[in-house]
Length: 247
Image 1 (cartoon, rainbow, N blue to C red):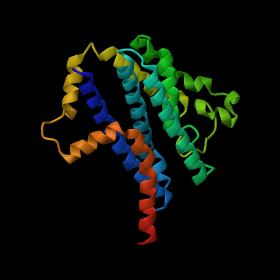
Image 2: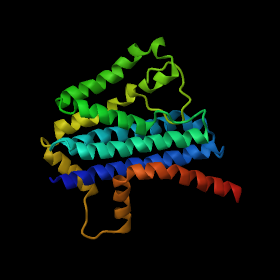
Image 3: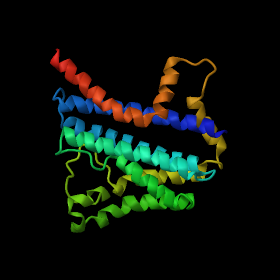
Image 4: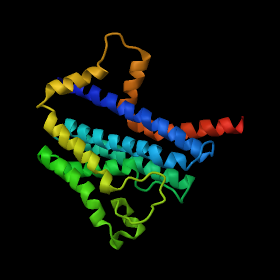
């Protein structure tokens, strides 16, 4: 199977994750404007739904990293993509700080993705099973690493900060980076060894000779997930605010 087809599969899966993210943020925004109970959308099944979406982005990013580097690392392309990701993370931090300094996003999903991208550069040559074990160790070791040493707020990004961060979107290195290692490790173990599995999975998102606007839009979302991530919340917030103002 060609790399172009594998990208189509990842684009399809990423599009599903993006649409799920938009759904959750729409419900979260309803809670922000007190249209629904804000406690409900920040706890229970909704909270599980939210972290599963974030984990899926990290997992797919790990797979994408291996797809981009298995034929050799292009430092020019890597640096360009990393700069865009880091810039997007800074935009989120600056924007949320101006919106509400008490809950601004200082280490959200984009910040963690940037951090994991740098980690990936250091470890992607390791055997896949080692990467899986690193992911497991990140999850299992967290309860034993939490201590007063990480009490200063500036160390909260580690995920070992013992108290609440107050951030509207927070993904610490422990335990959430594990999803990235799982994606990277599984990609190394499966891609090239189990082509028939990937091929059958690809059929879920296969191109058809007769294209339509829905299919094109779906894969556009997957290919441009970062752009959608940056613009969807302002659009949702403005729409809900406008609805309430002119209701």
